[in-house]
Amino acid sequence: MPWQQLHIRCEKSQAELAETLMLEADALSISLDDAGDQPLFEPLPGESPLWDDVIVTGLFDGDCNLETVSQDIANDVVATRVWTSRVDDKDWEREWMKNYHPIECANGLWIVPKWMSPPNPNAINIIMDPGLAFGTGYHATTRLCIDWLTEQPLQGKVVIDYGCGSGILGIAALLLGAKQVYAVDIDPQAVLATHQNAERNKVADQLQAFLPEQFSDYCKEQAILPVDLITANILAKPLMSLAPYFATLLKSQGSIVLAGLIENQVEDVKAAYQPYFEMDGEFTFSAQEDRHWHRLSGFRRA
Image 1 (cartoon, rainbow, N blue to C red):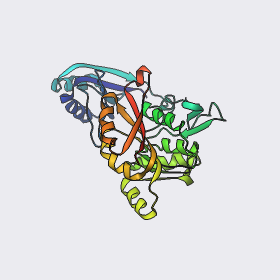
Image 2 (cartoon, rainbow, N blue to C red):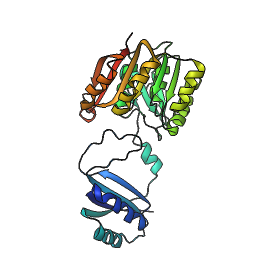
Image 3 (cartoon, rainbow, N blue to C red):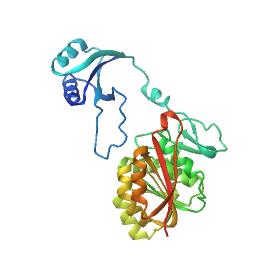
Image 4 (cartoon, rainbow, N blue to C red):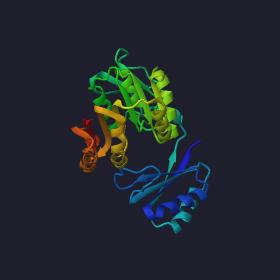
């Protein structure tokens, strides 16, 4: 069955009203998109910032009289443009899967969606389910960290992956030779996804995933600290606030890699880590689409 979409371009102050009116008109779902190429790099947990210029799109049943709905909504919403479109019915699961393909990272490591065969079966292949948790390998910040990991002497090391998302960085560390990974995330969905992906890559016996409070309790009970290496691919503000805590987790001369930074945040993050860490490495992708993202790495001061 075909579907219909109603699109309303408006200022963000009108977006909530447009969304409410569409739902009252029996919209099946609502999506919000950037209408003006305005990046939103760093929403904090629990925040849902909007672009200044927004396209609010409602999905409606094919039998709905969308002309009447659009006229009614346009009477109440200050919009710069209102239009409709049709969406043919498809096998949406297969359409979603088309967006993913194997990715070759540095030094011959591959990230492979679980439904595909590795292009190089003899390589180190991370088999991932691009589910709800962040970190499928398709974002520049994830690849920045993985590329860094491929260059580290990980054999026998104990690693903390803080802000683990899908668990991809911890799994990469284990496949590259690490002995044990402790993965931490504030999102229960991420903890679940990490467990599932660890099982998928046959490293579940070497990886444990926790919510932050659980991890704190585990550290007290098991005396696992300090560790050899920390990965943290999150956001600049949480990274800055976590600097003193990370210093308590990492042994002297232990390594750390930070990602999720844009250019104007790098110096602030460096300053936050300066009392505890020697940040000796900075890197960004040269590709135009990834040029915003930066990585910092360094080691724990003695």
